[in-house]
Length: 157
Image (tube, rainbow, N blue to C red; front, top):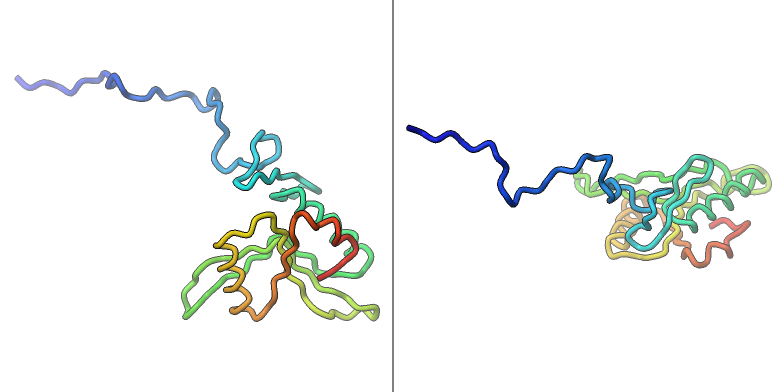
């Protein structure tokens, strides 16, 4: 006589709690509006014009750039522009800056293109990606410390 496998759960088996009764937030919600959590580096995200920003400083800089855009000082404002980093035909990573825009002179011509990143914490990975993007694209990334965003009101890179 063969014994059939037991249909009872093991004594130490974890009980599955319905998703609606879980108390911890879903994955990927750290720092989102209304989550009650801050991100990895204590940055509380916020939403402006329906766009999510990872920190208050980044949102503040966006508001400053909108004013510059309205005044005609800049043009072509892009949020989170991606930069594919490819070396020897191999994609190494994707770097996403916070902002990219063109600075316009008084005659309406583009003087230069600026790539900005508002940074509260500069990580080792960020340093490597920044160097890689600057080398591959022959550009300079402007870092704005999150504590000094207020000083950038009305200024371009």
